[in-house]
Amino acid sequence: MEKRFTYSIQPLLSQKEGSISGPMSPMEFAKKVALNVGFKFNRLARLWFADERINQSHEDGGLTGHDTLIIGAVYTNDIWLSLWVESGVRAVAIAMAYRSDGSIDFTDLYRQQHYVCKLKEQHVKDIFQSVFDDPTQINIKTA
Image (cartoon, rainbow, N blue to C red):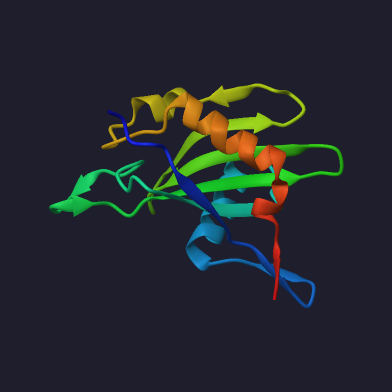
């Protein structure tokens, strides 16, 4: 019997005195990806999975500590989300979607990865739909 898919979302951006900041590693990763891919973002969040094998590889007798991040943008009339695996040295895009579009673009690169356990398309759809239904999950926190 398959385990029930459960996850939580941790918003990473905070605002203090008009300045937006976030944890150094995820923030630098998001800035680098945005610059290389050519998009702007105003939301950043980390996903935590009940199944800690998701998006991890075996390394030195244990699992790697790759982050799965939501990098997105909330606009007045739409939301754009992208899902990434950050391994410290490289970026692997999983999927991207606009709320208004209704479709999700999955990447072949993610399908080719050899993680112990990967997200299924339905899992990604569920994550995106959850944020589209309640974007406050990735709101910028006020300090």
